[in-house]
Length: 599
Image 1 (cartoon, rainbow, N blue to C red):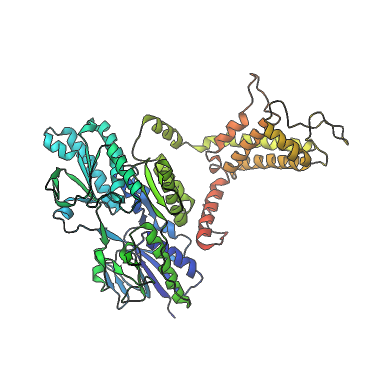
Image 2: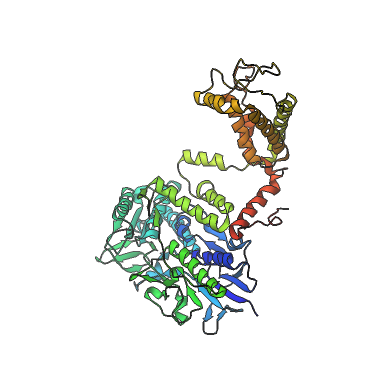
């Protein structure tokens, strides 16, 4: 019997989630083939496109390689553009290929909706793809370059006026980036900040109307304090190359309109022969199946799912949950189980307005604004990235967001970031690492020779002597010892002296071997620092000839945190292996001992 063919069309948030779920449920079934199609070889973090447009992060900062996401799964990635769909005969067609399917998940995403506004499609910039974001970025930069040389006041005014059409999440996030970037561009091109005009136009009565009124008000106040002109209850009526006309009859002279006023399902779906709702969205039933074809599912922004008379909004969480549900229902049908109804549980929304201000409305939590909301948004992004690609994606996110970002800020922040991100050759740390290891190993060996592995106590209250050996015990409490540490020593360590002296010896020998061979160097460095802090709190560190405490071990251990074991050390092979094992476990809930080695 031929294998069941499951095709997911689109590698957005919903498509990736569907692929992950199908692999998890059907990975043991060799008679099922899962294929994920996309015209790009990368998954785009669409919620962060404004950062590329506003020069906060480089384009690679919002791209995730699909091959990386699907590594260690049974999902096959097909890099191809589908331009025709025959649902009746279960066929997909690209320019030169034909694909068959038994089940199809439509996750092709959305596109801008222009609402028939004259000139909008021809003259406005949109922000719905990475290419859109790069175009906006290059255009804004070009406007400053032209304005710096322009002598005509009217033309210069048009060049330095930037209008965002649409005051939803994307619109205010785009404006937040503009506020920060134009400040940098003004310094770069020696243009007075007073010449810059920032405008946001919204047809409804408030910005981000889906938010609580208090949070929406905080966004408005934030923007106004930074000189943004806000027009609400103001539909755009016409767009020209050099102006935007509004319903009142006034116009705003500008050469830059960024349109974020609405979305609709991809125009592509009109040719599928499916029942469509508002804005071309495919109507689905309670199981996310299309009305005409039970083997065809629609998820994310492309679907119209109604609950209690209300259409589910186009949010990332909607896409993730619908992708998960559709995948479970296909797996249930293949395995002969009962399908489940789609019951969305939206937990809230977050909106960032620039690098340092955000608002968050999350179910079960108080409303957050400012830095706490910004931190929450970063944590949610990292949680998502960990789920699709492991720790590497979290590290890449941190690098692009905080270390290797495109935009500059004030001198203090740039100096700190510059020192943190500076790349160095860890090769030069190898001699220090090995010497540190030798010193720890010798210290451990000396303790073994001194009898720390014997059956008599080496640790005890000051002035006491061991009954069997008449040897003085080493006191862990002195005049400089903090009271809390003295309590630990007297109530926990002394009654268990034999155990602790053996643990100390084993730890020192282990640290020596770890540093010498470069294995788990980062962890060893943290333990080394902790051991020395422990010595400093108890017996105190030995003094140098100058009378200062000898901090050599601590200083050398801090240097080891820079990845010293990745050069001429076991960590060069071990860390990538463990990282890949973690990613394999994420997707398969098991380990594969022979996968993930870096040779």
